[in-house]
Image (tube, rainbow, N blue to C red; front, top):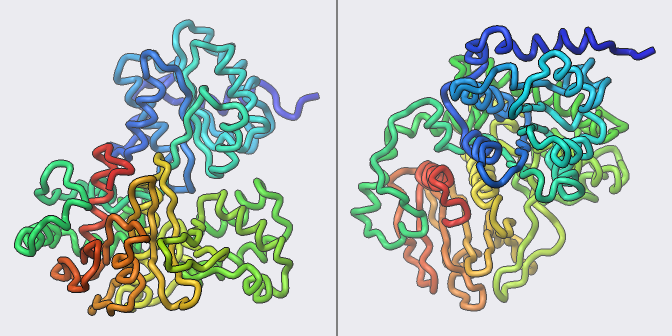
Length: 486
């Protein structure tokens, strides 16, 4: 006897798909503000000549489900029969007990319609052998157009490598960029030149740069809020920031670490995972030593810590930045830096009072934001992203290094009242060294009046640029389709 019968599944499907009864019902779930991934996913499933499924991967609360509802809303507005559209979440405890084929079969007994059908599977990683079912669907059901979401990206990407080549594309969705934050709040955009690139700013004189920075003044207060609330659409649109941070903390700890990570990665000690994530929050942007962490985690084995770190990375909660060689200076080997996926997650977990008045904490938040923006901006390219630290003088470091076949870009964050760097600083050393092959260098500052070329004599000029302008222009370039072209 089956644990779940068809009537139970039908009841759930009807609840998930209210537009079958009332086409306008989807508008209650669909928001007018759209993330960049919405347009990309819609382009994939509507392409006239290349048939592909779309898989959206990202942490909780980045807006994956909202994107699905927005796509459904768009399709209904275009005249697609609402009954030809199916949404189902495999996070549902009853749906978890049946497979993909069973769900589709039951759906088609309710509505045995003809024509193209649009299928939306939420949190697909919770159904067994999801990638095999998607392969079967793609190969045998030419009338289906499928979009799926998942919170554990490498699980999705492994499935893509095994079965999805030529069948579906994975779109990784980080938390919102500062530009997306401004756009979702419908803030007035600064009057900027079209397709203005960050690498072109070095050609501007001080007067032109000053005029450009002046245009970001109205966004200054919003930038501080962005650092606190982060790039989570629902929280950004909230009018209660304290409550929003509490919700974020509960989601990360209760839903992700205590549930998702444990379920997906067979974690044996939930308490150890919580302690490790707290440890990473306290030491984010610092060099990470797995042996030190293992000792501080009650002498846990290195292998266990390593597997837990990998689970957190797969769950889109952290980034691992690897050390990179730059020129002839000799880089530190082996030890990564840990970045929390969004500075707001760290803020919510650590609950630090008056974080905006703490210069050190602000520096960590901005460095985290810079790294996250870079990962998003270059994700569809061949870029290697990491950090540099000199092996023999480990005080000399560059926070973010981006390397492409013809480009090497350095970013050093000095988010403080005085952004002065000495002639012995690592970024200055590397910009003097012809063997480093650096093409661009940025010193990311705090004040909007702290801009211009540094006075050091270097082969490659180092541009001081305020963080608010750097992150906004980076996000804007990504929105304009200039991904990977700084």
